Length: 97
Image 1 (cartoon, rainbow, N blue to C red):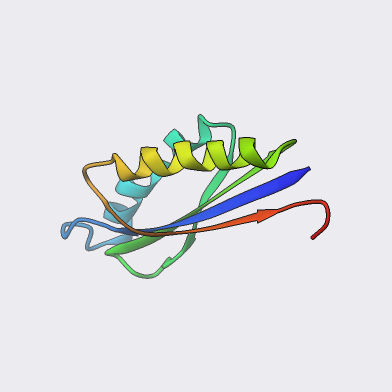
Image 2: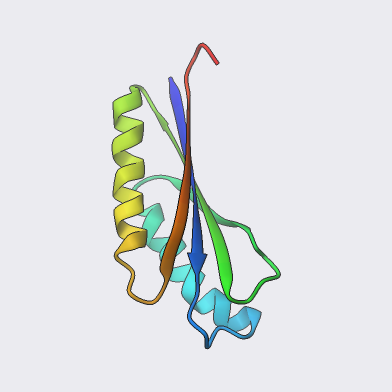
């Protein structure tokens, strides 16, 4: 069994000057990520209006499948024209960790 995680660091548009505006960008991305059968949530930069960190986790029987799911998630986030993907941090944990 493997668990694969990723944290996406996002730069939001300049008009996200309130937490309500920030949510209007983050919530649709989190909802779209969940279609990949992953756990997804905003996990960082909670008080910053122009930034967001979205975490994703998946459990897989094989490491390759976990990486494939994270690749799909990263492509989805990178394809969103309203945000800029600044960085991605990934981790893969196996039975022997």
